[in-house]
Length: 152
Image (cartoon, rainbow, N blue to C red):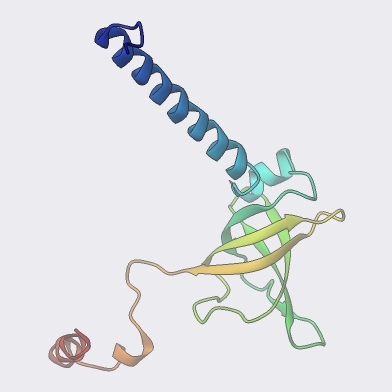
């Protein structure tokens, strides 16, 4: 019993089916992930073209010196994220990262509130290239090398 297709045509049909399956899987994955994408804004961009309040985004910049305030509940903080050209007020409730201080870099994940305040669900503190953990600050270079070797 023969299928009526030459082997050459059978291979062509299989290649086309595989190609359609790959394109379909890629399209399905892109469609499923489209709402999971978190766009990154700096304050200037957020002020010029604010995202819709229901859209999750990331806001990056520097914590403006003198802007960090703690609400009476002791858990909520408010501060300004600055990029040198614009600033966005941010509100965050939760545990703040150890490296989070005024003048440091920060990436806040959340959404822009209707009042123009960015409501952060998560804060990521950034450090400079000279960062040294507290445990290693008072050690000599030899002591630092020994401590690092002990952890490996």
